[in-house]
Amino acid sequence: MACFLVPAAEAIVTTVASKSMNKKADPEKETKVSFVSKLNWLNNLLWGGSALLAFEHVWHGEVTPFFPFLTAASDPASTAEMLREMSTVGVGMAVLVTGVWAGMVLIARAIEKRPAENAEEAAPAEEQA
Picture 1 (tube, rainbow, N blue to C red):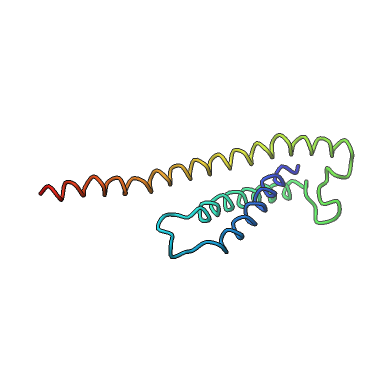
Picture 2 (spheres, helix red, strand yellow):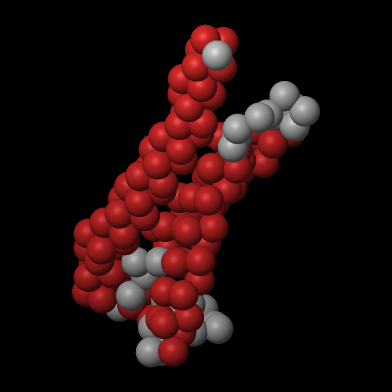
């Protein structure tokens, strides 16, 4: 019913954090993928997923263009069900997307370290020749 609001709220927080960090970043100093860029990956995942879910909810008539916008918010029993769905499905989706992003960051970090290790191994071999 409104599970897309939880990842959307996380997306708002990460977007604000990204914009704040982006002002402080020094692009000339960056040789690797910056944390701000990695945080933008999370933003894209969250905003994209939230937009698709919102479209799906509009398609099924659960979100309307008039007040109260969420059809479940018009009835107290439906509101309780909506809040339960947000706390289970919405939080689960946000945690899953954040976990996938954390995996992406770890893989990127491993890839960034690999060339440095290869360069260190190649340097002694060149000196011996």
